[in-house]
Image 1 (cartoon, rainbow, N blue to C red):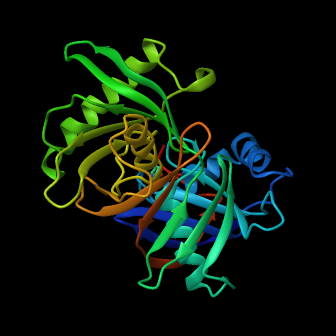
Image 2 (cartoon, rainbow, N blue to C red):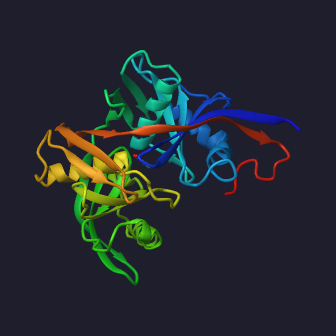
Image 3 (cartoon, rainbow, N blue to C red):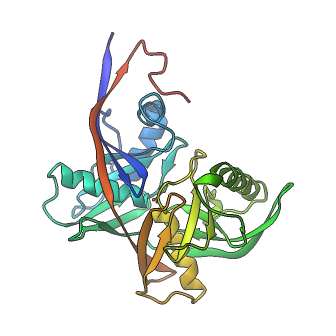
Length: 311
Ligand code: PYC
């Protein structure tokens, strides 16, 4: 019974899980993080679901495969993946990776650069143990777009980039909370489908794969619900989603450069964020906390009918 084993460390950032792959993964061909992702997708995609989905994981997990960086002064490259596919960048995942590297004693400095498919990000461990991630440049692509959802009416929102493409709904009026997950997931999924059907995309026709709904918050500037590709909701306030939100707030002139924005998630966890102005948008910095939850070895046996997960 030949077996393959893969070493992982699990953490959660503001409730959202990250599974960092440390060893045992087949070596990938490519000279950049984007090329390594492409080889992963083309030749080893079954390991994506084997690592993340049941019975070894659960669908909300985000994977982070550590690899060679693109740039000589970066600590590592990261290929982010989830139950639905691959992510250009992941804010909560970057915080999880940094806490994992710290836990392993692999950080020589409190500040590191990490290369993702969306670009290089800089992460700093703060004195209180939280991590601040300076994300890739984020910007609003389209303002106040109307999308028609059959049987539900129309929704207006902005299309923005925060390392992934988001549709940030402006006029959702329902409650956001753990008691409403089914309805929030359903309406966000319908909006995602409608965007695709009605040809609303990110720049260069790129598919929008995240939807963000908002409500008032008792403890922060705003509360969100984020639907991720693959149909799971983000347990954290979503680092790239909060970056997209900052880009919209900056474009609307309602949040000045350097001012603090607190974003609560549907689970009640909070990210603190701010931005500096940049060429076409803003450079956001997102701060959150992550905690190690497990250190283990996944076993993939040839005769396991669910060796590549329940898909
Ligand atoms: O924190 O950027 C994020 C993220 C994306 C998908 C899940 N979390």
